[in-house]
Length: 256
Image 1 (cartoon, rainbow, N blue to C red):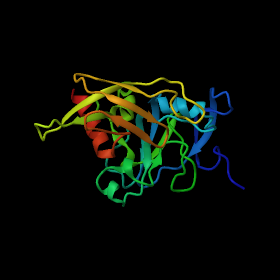
Image 2: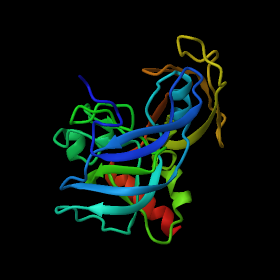
Image 3: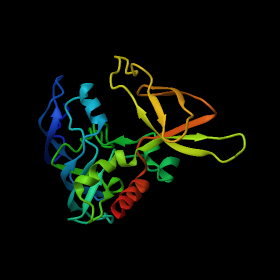
Image 4: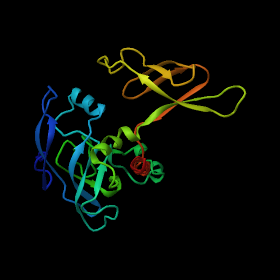
């Protein structure tokens, strides 16, 4: 017989989760694993609210704490951990695991790993389900821990762990007289209403920051993007980043 979230691990934890179709958050008891040789346990002090958290609740993905912009203070490390020590400020973003052996992982782009493990509501390597940061405690592999500089307030650091490392959609255009592309970030405006099939009810409309060239149409659902662009344009973007560039982003933000 399968164990409940509250009894499957030895460390007791408490959080907030949607437990019925109303999607209202309510107190939720669960458990987390004991701190392993390469794990970091920390007390969660802040957790940002991402739009994907809200989407998850509204889609009735229930019965587990969400949240993937998580920051706090280290309470326990064991043996092999070298990155942080007890008392350090740390964070966890959108992933807590990957295969660590594919080309993407070797290139410090764990976010592209085909075996990436999201921070919450995903099967972990031990077969249990991951729980997010709407909780009082978290245990994570050292590799997926981000060090938060001492001069950075934790409440400011939290949203950077998702929004701060999510790449803007970029535009690259070439003119007939130059081989150098020009890159320009676009800000998208999209209606929030979506149909039951998760397609947007109408295309997103893009406004260039400086150029008059424009995107004709842009539509997505959860799995694909369709773009029609005028004038030999290329659109690119990325959801989150690898652990190395996430740490670099946090360090840069702290310095600036």
